[in-house]
Picture 1 (cartoon, rainbow, N blue to C red):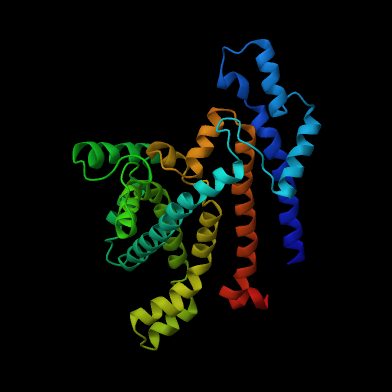
Picture 2 (picture 1 turned 30 degrees about the horizontal axis):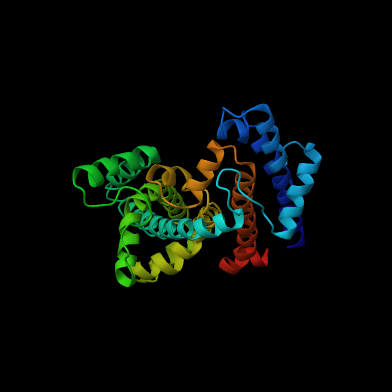
Length: 315
């Protein structure tokens, strides 16, 4: 465990350094993006206010100090504390991502199990073909099609935002309104994850079919449900669990494109707008939050493996 912890800490240090350098490698600057008509004196004033006139090592020192103190400073483009921006947007992204993970896990695993059950009858080809075709469509294209069909043509679902701006809904009405706004983003962001869970669960379930314990369980006359759950799925769960934790690690980044398409008020939309505005601090801390989440979830995954599979614990 100490060796894995040391590796995670080393990766975190590398992420902190790259996270500082990569935004500054982008062409352009916050000043030019904000207003191309600034005079030289005005531009110098803004550089001084933002601290961009300081040497790079001083900017890096300020960046490190902000990480350890929690004082993330102000956003260049939004003129608001970054901590407040993240606190306002994170709940929306967490809601969408958790719903997407649950939806993808259940649907993808059920389809994978169905494909394995139909293998002897050679009826699993339509399932594999349908899921593969659906997973090949780009997320932004799927989002635009959903907007055109259900938002514009039929007009049954809201097209943009996370809630109705001009309606003072409360209680159950508020919940229904938020869920209605989440339907199309949820479907869009879940399609890619569903195909991953489908292929992973299908391959994992196939890999244990010929094992001795499966043959023995069937020879003992156990029910198909008991064999499937206690023998097949229990031994095939590790790859699916790994994929689930990886998806959880990317919970804040997986919906960037989808949130931009639907103007969903989450971290993805904020990150997209920060990149366009060359808002270095907002980009840095958004990327840092995403990277740290991935590192922490990978570390937790390694710790949970022995609990899920006693064979790993014994080895």
